[in-house]
Image (cartoon, rainbow, N blue to C red):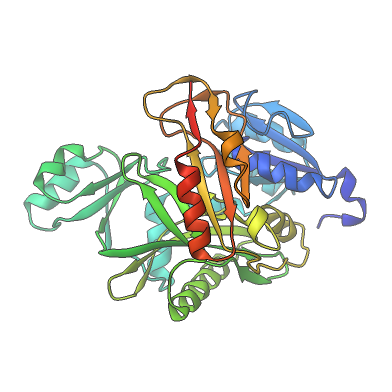
Length: 385
């Protein structure tokens, strides 16, 4: 247990150092917590804000293990960490939250799906395959029918490692990797909820957000809070989120992406045991941000209020197609003239097509107000080189 009477000397380790780590570092600085960040890139977003930066790979056993010796506790902003090093550190008494065994399950989308199935969590029907040949064989033997979605079991994120197969013409896109093949759900809406659970077992969740995706890059482009869903769907989705984080006995945050189908049934898509893109708006629009909530959860403090202060939209600032090089931001002056616009730039030096370079939260009086403002801002800010 962490001694909070001496919180100013607490050394919180964060792996890795992307934008989520940067925003967690900024939240921790409000409580004078010392933040140690490890990343392979000395110019990563969190490198210049943390108390101490360590150069190392989050996938390398020795780097993760050595980093663990320097801190009092570890949390993370990415799933693809060397879990064996975390397990070793835990066995030696290091506090690691969420628990490495939970991370190990979530790292593998096949194990995620099996966990959902074993705990009666609604999720799309699925089968597991070792490689592309097995998938093709199952199709030929009528054991698998289109349409379906292929997800590589490990390493995929932000739309990478996901293939939607609608007909035979898509078979050439199949990825030759251990995969989850799941039934394609007729989606009416995609929503997300972030649940929090403290070390004392207190559980709560943020209001559901509605997600809109970039059709070319297959990653989230816009989030709206509150989501345009019925009260019953909101209540059921919140209960699912609380049940799922409790089933894992997790301390920390669990971001949960969900589908709402044409019959208003809710299906769990996948999860992430960390702060998440779907919670960025909470910095301005909710009483307690997702980053402060993570700190409260892992430090054994009471969870903060998750009450929505104002309707909000979060726009991801993506690198413009056709540009790669030193980032240049156009339109900031004009965008910041609009009331309720809050700009967050991550500090990534190089822009690439669809790379997440920052985000904007837009606050308003009601849902239509923030939608109108977002439509203005979307056409103003451009990131080029």
